[in-house]
Amino acid sequence: MTATSPTASASGVATEAGPIDRSALMGNYAAPPVTFVRGDGSTLYDTVGRPYLDFLSGLAVTSLGHAHPAIADAIAVQARTLSHVSNLFGNTLGPEVAATLDRLIGGGVDRAGGQVFFANSGAEANECALKLARRWAGSGRFAVVSTWDAFHGRTLATLAATGQPEKQAPFLPLPDGFDHVPYDDLAAMDAVCDPTRVAAVLVEPIMGEAGVVVPSSDYLVGLRQICTDRNILLMVDEVQTGLGRTGRWFGFQHLGVEPDVVTMAKALGNGMPVGACWARAEVAAAFVPGDHGSTFGGQPLAMAAVRATLAVMEAEDVPARAQRLGAVLRRSLERLPGVVSVRGEGLLLAAVLANDFAVPACREALEAGLVINAPRADVLRFAPSLLVSEADIARATGTLGRILARLVAVFGSAGPGGPADGPADGPPIGGADDAE
Ligand code: PLP
Image (cartoon, helix red, strand yellow):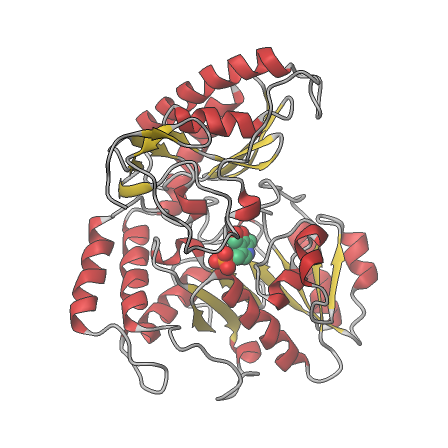
């Protein structure tokens, strides 16, 4: 693992200081095109010190940029004080962070009046929501309805909720009680929500891994109505959209609906692995001691990272920044060659391309020192730091514009499929399919 001389990776990017022996790692991830060793704000550095502008943030995780000093200091101080005690005992940070999250769920001023369970990932936050729904609804009413193309995690239950049969197929049989309907289709939801068997609806306010898919403005409002009328829980998966990314603290706040359960993770600790499941107090009350737990969940070290992250997020008013800078990024992307449309909210944006050249675009962007990813063959996703500068947006879109101009010339804009003689795609770079 010692750094020697630069070599070319599989994608042709000359970034590795020397071969890194990955033979002891399981083969569930594609071989990485680049290995990063350091980060600073919106910049990542590879093993030979080459800088990259990070417009992906580790899949919407490092929302305050890399190595933020306030969060690094908070982690270091807490690590020297008390890292972990288990949930057999109390710590002072968890209750404080839970109260802050409850206030942000309420919009930022007053507490919403709910309660929080701390986990260590998005999947675990959703797993908690799924178990809570079953506990709340009582025996016999255990089904959860989610949407096709949604992504809710990789544990068996969250995989069952994930609406992607190709990801489920190798792991069948999955737990019972998961139904799927098309996203943004209230009639389909209305038809499947039989209150004698359905306990909860689980949806993303914007589907991130599916390619930043934004529903109609009446979708969540309509779901709320269906759920309220039938005494079914409305559970919103804000693992990717939460904590300022879309221009509000949470995606559901754009539409004024009040969910019963909200899950979050990614940006919560700015890189510290933390997840959380919030529920209205009456729903949260369904859990009694012994029903659910986590050895690490809510431990002081992780909570110190979250407390510092939320403090910086509030001080910087990251929702407002995401709105303002998201508008700048959106305008710049809309002007790029080969971009048909831009969708998303705040700083969770996707450029829909004129043809299936998102994978080569990502590869060439990486070669040019820009990190983005391709959740779909014709979709590029952007999730930069919420503290990104306008100058960095101009640099990123300038780099991408040059790449897209060349790819449009090669692939044309004939719609999905493109010319048969277009360049070979090669392995996806930063493709969400295998990386979350
Ligand atoms: N839910 C959503 C909306 C996600 O985007 C993801 C990850 O991409 C998850 C859940 C799973 O989170 P994790 O990978 O932390 O388990």
